Image (tube, rainbow, N blue to C red; front, side, top):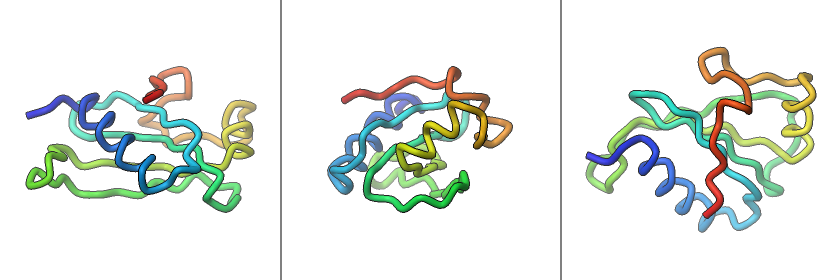
Length: 101
C-alpha cells in the first residue's frame, strides 16, 4: 500500500493532466485520507471553500479516500489573508506541502 503522500503525488499528476490550468497543488497530511488543495485558472470564483470527497480506488492504485478543494488564484489570496479558511481539521496553508511536479 502506498503512503498518503505518494497517493497525493499520483493524484496531483493525474489532475494536472485533466486540468492543465492547475497552477499549484498543496498536500495536507492526514493518516487515513489524501487532502489536496488545487489552484486552477479553470474554476470559477465562488468565494467559498467547498471540499469534494472521493472514495478510495485500490483497483487503480488509489489506496485512500481523498478530499479535494478547488480554488481560483484570487481565492488562494483570500485564504492567505484570512478572508477564507480551510476546514478546521486541515489547519492552515502553512501546514501544507506544495507538490510541484
